[in-house]
Every structure is written in C-alpha cells, then in structure tokens.
Length: 254
Image (cartoon, rainbow, N blue to C red; front, side, top):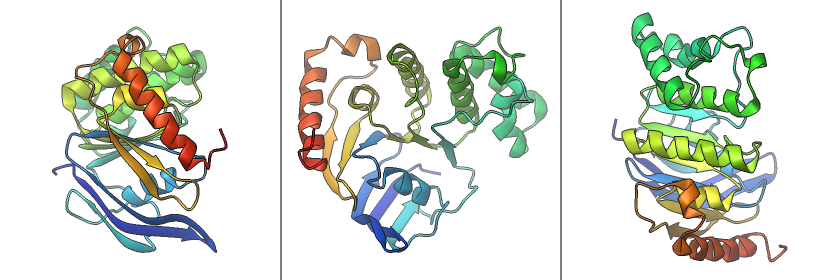
C-alpha cells in the first residue's frame, strides 16, 4: 500500500454533460494536494472516481497500483457533512469505521479515545451529536477518518460550512495529524487560504468541463501553523498567484 494516485487522461460525463475533460494528475505517497476551482467543475467527481464510487467513462486511474473500487481499506473519505450517527456517542462515532472493518474492540476504543483528545474533544467522549456544535461534530468526523489506517485520505470540503475561526482551528488540527502520519491527502476546497496552509501542491481546475489549468507548488516550510501563515509574506504571494489563476478558471468573472 504505497499511497500513490495516478490519474491519466480521465474524461467523465453524466448524461450528455461533460464534467471532466482529459484530466491527468499524479499524487506521490505522503503528499498533500488541494483541488480548487468553480462549483460544478468536477472536483468531487474526481474524488468519487478515485474512491471507486462511480464507474470511469474513459482514461485510467491507479490507486496504490490497482484500479479504484468502493470499500477498499487503503482509502478513507471525509465528506462535507459530518454524517455522524445520532444514536451513537462521539466515542462510538469515532470508532465506527474501525468497527465496520472488524478492528478489535479494545484497539479501536483506545485509538478513537486518543484521536478525540488530539482534536480537542477530551471530556466529550460520551456526548451525542445533538449535544455538540457543528465544529465539534466535524472534529469527531476528523477523528473517525484518521482512526482508519488508510494511507490515502480523500476530503471533500470537510470544513466548508464552518466559520473562519473554527476553520482555522480545524486546519491546525489537520496539519498536526498529517505531520505525525503523513498520509496521501487529496482535499477539495473553495478556500484558497486553507489550500495554501495545508498543501504541498494546489491544483487549479477550470470551469466545466473541468481541465487542469495549473499545478502550483507550495514552497512554505513544514511544519506549518495555519494561524502564523496569515502574517507570512510568501503565503500572500501564493494567495495572489492562485487568485489570478482562479480568475482564469472562472473566465474572469470575479
């Protein structure tokens, strides 16, 4: 399980609508990349193809050297919604993926407990989702995702609906978790600051049909602090560069 993702000449359409057009992309093991671009340009479709959730129309995709298929153990997928089970506690929700995969009860309990502490939820293990704020529920979802021993993480705007301060806090937590384990991550986001803070590369996708317009290396040293980067001159240079490329992706409409 090397965690490498290879996308070659992928095109995809739904009905008569072309969503992705001849997309090629390589993600090396332990690399963190972000996909940015207009709504509807195929970013989530690409994640779903990598995860094996939808059939591929044309081209090829390799995930750790094999074809994508749903339910594989080396891929974890975090959605925009927390998708917590309301009848399970934070601890039980964090354990859920491991439970489904048959991980021994005590092993998954200890792992989930540790991750809940790492995401700042120590003391809330027995709380049900209705007792938690939106940001806290997303922390549980993040713990659940990292609880899986998957070398590849696919993340579809996991912090998109959060306020700016909570988003920064969760960005710090994600950076901390990634620094410790350095899994391969593909993140879809509309937040340029988030993409720059977290990533090794930021991929700019055009308006539909989605094509790759730019692949920008983020040359900020690691480890990073999402908060500290707000005052970093290079961060703002990269932000301006990506903003100009995003304007092109949007056809100059912003």
